[in-house]
Image (cartoon, rainbow, N blue to C red):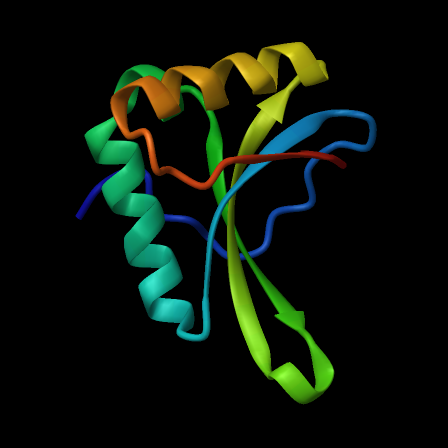
Length: 98
């Protein structure tokens, strides 16, 4: 098993930036997604933590968001998204301020 295994929902430091990589209705699938992303792109995600955040969307159900972080500013997080999209053009990558 990879060292990239998320522990669960990590509280990233306020004012830092993370990137939202995926959402799924299955928490185990969300953890598997992070492991695959971290293992596939160690140069992008090797130095950051993965987090699986449970989000209750009411009538739409519960989803699990895969987040990676943190970066000190929006530009640094944006650079990671751009580099990810060079490798995988259809990748979902949304910057979030924590």
